[in-house]
Length: 113
Length: 114
Image (cartoon, rainbow over all chains, first blue to last red; front, side, top):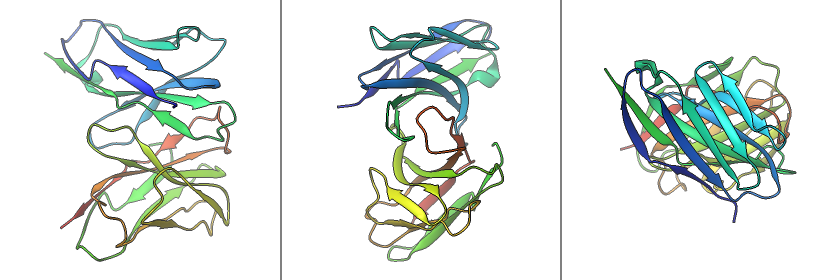
């Protein structure tokens, strides 16, 4: 069964600190993996999309890694800001799926001053 | 929110009533999607459409209906047959229906059944 598991469920960090969010998936055959940021009560916004051949992609203070062999991805946030408080969702697409995405439940990040 | 609008932002419905959620995009995208989000759950696909006058059921289509009469519009009707309609509904679009295309999401509609 195609699944995406994220950890931790929630995380509290102090402003300025770094953090890493984890994503494990069992989707096969794999096409690509995305990380989205979702502010409370808003729609998700794409941070990165990685294909099989990419193992690192950055978007400002966000860096995603992908290990397609172990089917794991991580999202590293550097020098966190209060505005980083949000849910971060890992999403995987299977090859031939015609846009049907498999969503993780998200990690809720709270950045405190 | 990338040129996708959803209305209304909040919607209240009495049990037994049908209600229609609006989704409009000005991105000239062919593909559009409707998702449902419940607390602590991942997004689940309700319906999707890859072209005008064509749409397909997603994983949880029961109790919902859609239409795609115009490229820019993909309204979702939540019918009285949907047993637990209270949720956050998200509309998305992508250039074409393909696994590698980024999906752009609207701001969402929160539906509450009273």
